Image (cartoon, rainbow, N blue to C red; front, side, top):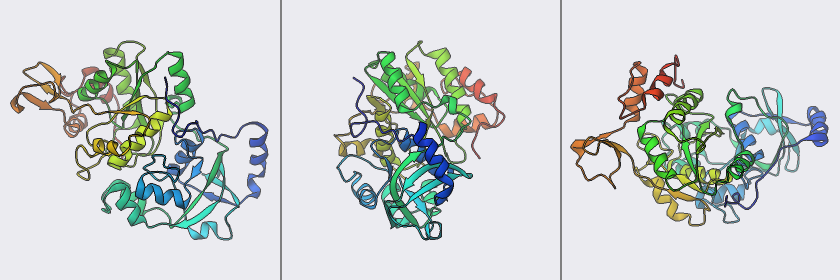
Length: 382
């Protein structure tokens, strides 16, 4: 059966009908603060149940618990603090218990009840969440640039923001209905922020051999420079699915969520989120959600030992390579041949070839996928 959402119920904090109309009409009379695009995404993820059981931004007690114990105060696993940062002058004159409007580009996005105002140590946050205080880490750098105070409290969504790929995005309520319609009982989710190469395809198909369906779930949101653009990732996956997957076994859907590059902690976070979407299994990559050399290659696997109560089954499928002796994709568990026969698929090499306008070898990437990527004038984030 499709698993229950994290914490038991799917959160819905989207205002509709008369209540929304009344609050929108009153919005101009309430104090407001301007929030970044990343925080808008957090608000939408809370409202749509992506972050179930959260109903708003973390209170201090939950924040501290998540930071040090990777659990909410009710002992439910949670590894990435979802917090709203503000400057003291932005909330001057406001107090706990007040309602405020969260705005983006002057548009009211949500109403929030300020239930707590507290400080945070950004360096300690970085040390715990990213396991480094190095400002060269993209997640650490973003943390250091955030504001000085945090406010905790529940939110209600007033307006959705328009996103260029909004027709690609599905929310948890939609995927859960879709999986039920397809009569899928076992669903494997695959997190990605890259275009697919043969290693990705191998891992996905290995998981599909025992599951009813595969959720390919590209992350649509902030990514670091050098990552592939969202529309390129979707086009590349559509080419792969069209030419190399059986019909009706794959759902390709965008996930509107920020990328943190928090390695092991983010692997758990990604698993929890996919549980909310209805997945029963989650593929955990080697160095999942990692960047540079900040995390060991299998740290993202080892952390799952600390969460036997996660409610979604992690799949640790070993890194694939092309074996010239086997004549196809394999991994170290099933291939007996030495390194002289094995060709590893390097994402860095693939990027270089794409930048130079070259079609990578077929053992690295399907030609239909490469041709699709090269149709884009500039496939990378800057």
